[in-house]
Amino acid sequence: MNTISAYKIDVHRRLCIQKDLSELSSWIHTLECFNIELDHHKIIEKQLIKNTSVSSSIQAIRRKNILNMASLCKYEQELKKEFEYGKLEYDAESSKRHNQKRENYLKFIEECNMFKNQFYVLLHKYHRK
Image 1: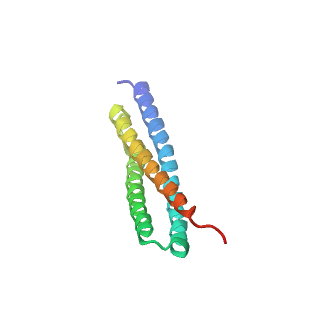
Image 2 (image 1 turned 30 degrees about the horizontal axis):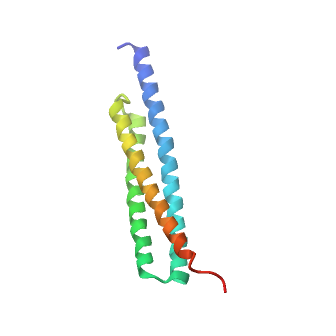
Image 3 (image 1 turned 45 degrees about the horizontal axis):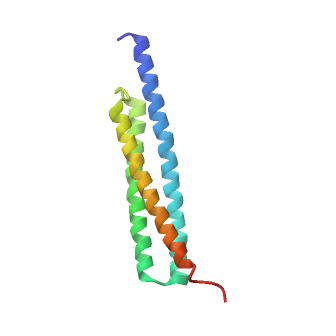
């Protein structure tokens, strides 16, 4: 393989990894924001709702959120290491792995949205007197 071909492959590899890192950063940021939102939900539950099943639901989804964040942070470190030191081509397997991470993330976001909707429906029961 000549030098120009190797250079093009490396540039392509780095661009693809950079794109994946950028998307991953957005996912992690969204999960961090959701964690803050869960803090607010917990306060509302303690002060207004006072229901142990709601409290347990908040705790359960927080655990899932933290596990998802940990998994994405580990993946981020792997990508950064590959970006800096790796020599492997960005191939269909790399893309498939990233797409699987995306699918897992989107599935969890859907679960988060369902939780929030249920929480807000529950809040409809409470109104000012």
